[in-house]
Image (cartoon, rainbow over all chains, first blue to last red; front, side, top):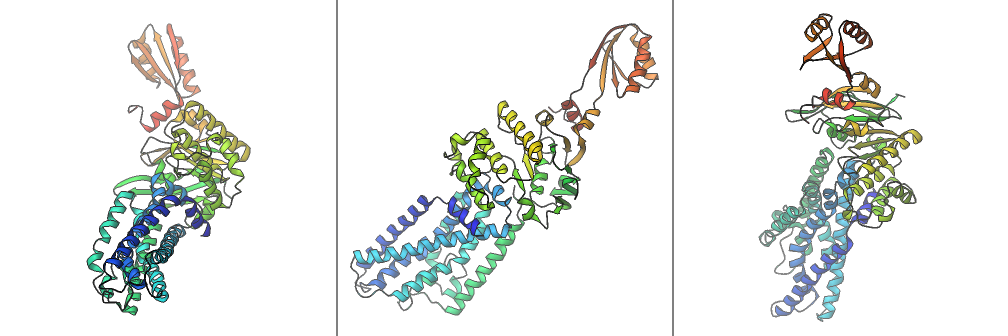
Length: 244
Length: 302
């Protein structure tokens, strides 16, 4: 299993992945910094405001979007030049092959979250936001957001093994994150069923008048149910698939 | 242990109403080169995909190296090198790195890579990304990928595709040496008999999903009939006498075309012909390719 994961690491075009993550970071933090400054009349000019402004872009759009893009990228080279035939005639059970893709994907998402945290600290220092860094709140948000991506990650890996075209997968992701503008306004007990919306609820801090309504037990239960469902469907479908 | 490395029993695969592979019983002897022949669409690739568990059969069983493919899939695959419908590779990586990934996944020593790149003559291009390779180079990389696994069984689907005549000769020699010196069994498919008749010990011919012939190449040769083209004075009379004696004879454009199936047949025909005045006689030999085309009914379609 470790070897399969390491082979994913070898195949990834790191320069491209890191570039798009950094590009997302620059865009998110310019927008977040801009909003924190321009809306300082409504929200205190502090670390919490900067964080939730960034989550409005990162958690709502880029995190779910990139989960889909990474999933498609992880399967892209197998689709392109018959790589599946190579990979699936290796002496590894098929479920381990798809699990290694899932693990590679959630590792990439973790990397994106770590960079998000680093960029937060850098941006805050540059624009001199006031007060203390709300460590508990942001760590909870960043780690929770990562965990809340798992159902989506499983769904995306499964779809990526089926869609041969990177373009189709990308378009599907873009169209799936747009409804988040509306869906994330719903309470988590409804919105979290939609896997693209789920990470936002975990990332957005509570106790602000913009905070989404999240009932933790229900929310976690929805995440577990959706993850388990996509996991079962995805693995079963991958294991039984005919590879032509 | 069975003398066969691949044994299938009633192996069948359907796509909707269409039966792509129809109850085939492959018997591939250990340590031999087995040529799996058939026209495009005859079911060769579907069979190979089933042997590699890329697709499942609807009926029947597969045993490879004495083990059930369904039960011991990973154990079997560890000892099988394959090339299915063209090479599979990661185009954005170099040939070296492509092989390195395989070595890592299979716990093979990385130092083997150079040796195998050398065997397929890719050493000078080892560090270039594969997407810039020619089709022949990619095919050779595919062969290196199959060989580096040090398999007991090589399953190669149309391995000569995209190779120039020199490349084909090279791969033929390589296969002969792998089989004869290292005892590797090679199962290779082709739609052109002449491509493999010089190296294959055993031949299986598949047509419309059915295995219509499976035996040694010598047995296939026995299926050939010698034909005599005879110009003779009294053709009508000769035709009548030969036909009455049960010979397979046709009268065409003043000449007799006689098919001779065995030696007894030959002796009988010569005895009859002696009583006529022969002006010209020519033996027409039938190539293996003709037999193959005849067997598969493709002689009209090519």
